Every structure is written in structure tokens, then in C-alpha cells.
Image 1 (cartoon, rainbow, N blue to C red):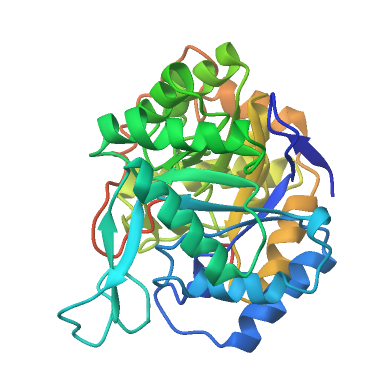
Image 2: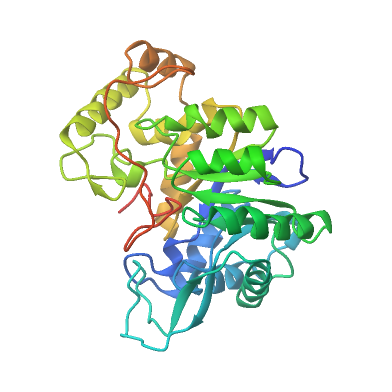
Length: 352
């Protein structure tokens, strides 16, 4: 599988990434065996970029990913995790996590973008994964914590990067405006952009993508199915868009895009995976993969040929934006942090 470098760094990501939120029991429980089989299938398919976070299953995703990768040659793959949520003992457990993961709530998340919090978070992640290092570290959803994240957390990550402890640093969010600020105003090398550069939402053309080009930095695209509406050949009523029921006008737009895709010999989900690469700043698309079957499905979508003529027609019909243009349909607001939301879009996947 082709790799692309995070600009200005030595970190090279395979174009398709393994989003490990779902093996942290996102929305429903899965077994250790399923998680290992999914990672094994990803490896066999050539995927060498794996993304996780403490938030995912209160550490379960990190533990499972680390266990599944432990026998692999460490120099052959890239792992990213995130900081900003420390896992601490839960003094008032209710028995189940309340943020979308089917795990016991013996731990709870505590926001912390301080320098000490960053160092403690990375140390805990290394312990959970059993890895000797992290290749990429993102600030995780600092929407309401800009000052501390920019003034304390990012400089702490920059120090670790400059010492050679981490290969690349950045931030991951569901909104693009603040990610653009991280690219312009901090030492970030790369951002993980969820749901804001897709076939249904190109709002990142207004901020984060031009910022990445201007600063010579990189973008990892997540949430490319917009929570499901772009994940089927034929979109239907009742499908989700940004974690909510898709409004009728967006279902109609998705159906129209799907028809154009068919006319060009491809499918809507294949085009959804390919579309982010139409911008030069995008180096990777990361998809959530719970099972071996989902890995096979996602890698097949990635491998399908999507002709350049598709983008030309979609732009001509005002179904997607070109640089500096707008689309007349209101596409909805970026999802913000809240219960049962996966902030970096890894809940999106080709299979339910």
C-alpha cells in the first residue's frame, strides 16, 4: 500500500489507516479475538498506520491494539494516540460508560492539556499498549481548551518531537476552524480532520486545507462517510449524518452523487474514500475497522478505481465544491463533544 509522508517529518503513513476506536467496544461489545483478527487482516492488506486514544473504551482500544501489534516488527508500522483526556479512577461508577463505549466505568475521563497531563497521558498509553514509543501524538478534541492546549500541551509535544521521542505532533477534531489555528499558530505537523472534507461537507476548504498548504503541513482525513450516509451504494432515509438522522435534502444530495458515481463506473462509498485525496494536503484516510470483514470491505473500497472525470462532473453539477466556491445546501454543523459522539469520526465505517 502506498505511503505518504507527514510533511517536514520522517513519519510515513499508508494511505489507508486503521481506526481503532471500534475495537474499544464503540457502541457494542466485541471480543479480543475479533479485535486481533481485524488488526491481522489490516496487516495482511498492507495497512501500516493504526490510530487509537485513551478515550476509546477507557483504554481498551489501546490495550487491544498494542497486544495485536506486539509481535510485529516495530519499525514497519506507525501508531498514533492522543492526549487531553487522562483516565483516572471513577469514584462513583454506575456499571457502564456513558460516552458510547460498551465497557465498565471503573475509570473516568478528566480533561487535562497541561504539560504534566500530556506527559502522564503518554506514559499511561505506552504502559497500556506495551509499545516502546508513539510515532504520532494528537491533542484530542481541545475545542473548549484552546489556551491550555496551545500554550502548554503543544509545546510539550514539540519538545518530545524535537528530542526524537515522537515523530510528529498535531491535533484531532470534528471542526476545521480551530485545526487551522493549530496549523498556523503552533508547532503542529499534522491534523486529524473528521467529517469536514467529504462528499457532503467541504467546509475545510475555507480554513484548514489552505492553512495546511500555506504552512507546508499535512491532514489525515477521518469521518469520510459522515456517520453512515455515504457508506452505502444507495443512501436511504433513516441513515445517519454527523451522528444524527440525515435531513431529507442531504439524503437527496447523497443519492444524486451516488447516481453520478454509477455513471462513472464506481460507487458512492468508494468515491467517499477517494475524495479526500483530491486535495494535496491530505496524506491519509483513516476508517474504523471492528472486524476482519470490515477490513476487507474498507480495503476493497480504497482499491477501487475512481476516475478523475467523476470529480469534474460533480463540480460542474454543483454537487461538490471547488476551491473558493460554495454549495447552496446547508450541510449542518460540526458535531461537538458530547455523549455518544466519537469526536474524530472513527465510528464511520463501511459495514454496520
